[in-house]
Image 1 (cartoon, rainbow, N blue to C red):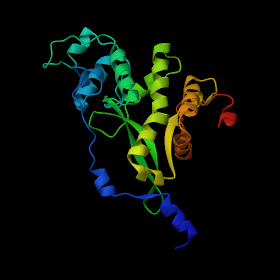
Image 2 (cartoon, rainbow, N blue to C red):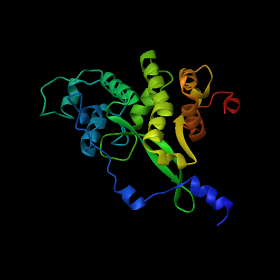
Image 3 (tube, rainbow, N blue to C red):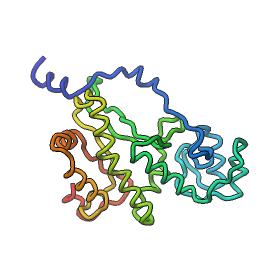
Image 4 (cartoon, rainbow, N blue to C red):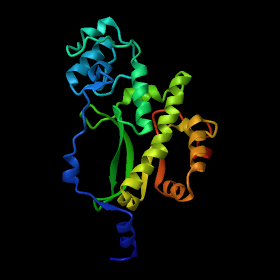
Length: 245
């Protein structure tokens, strides 16, 4: 034992990985009365594939297939014997509602989790904030996230993305650190951010900066000393990415 070993003990956690692997992802059959499978967020892979096939959008069965319009032709792909209510053509509105509920900390189809990151001694030294949907699988609803974070999306979607992403960067990690103080032993908690969000004139940057300035000193210090930014690699970097980093 030496000073370096004592340091990583204080900045890491012992995790029972066997119990961790037993944790099941929750499922939610309906979203505001609508069958989750009809908006691409069902727990049945075959139903999700049927919808993807009808929309001619191949891909992962649990991707969520983003924002699409419901049509009469889709009734045959994913019928709902449990309800006679017609589904609004704009699935986007329903999903934006769920993203807003998530951002507000209310029960939602979408939720955040912490994915532990281990060192060579099998101690958790950090964690990454990831997005999940209540469809029973440990996978992100990538199609929905891409649709929400599309820089070319209409203002309505961009504003919701700003609110949701700001909550992911600030609110949810803060709540986790307060509710579970043991997480403060981690070296870092990382949050995924688009390259464009690093620009000082971006909506997300401005919102996070303003809200950070409004926090109590102790809360702000806790956040900035724990939360780190992981830059997403699925979008083109702005020309001045080196300066922004």
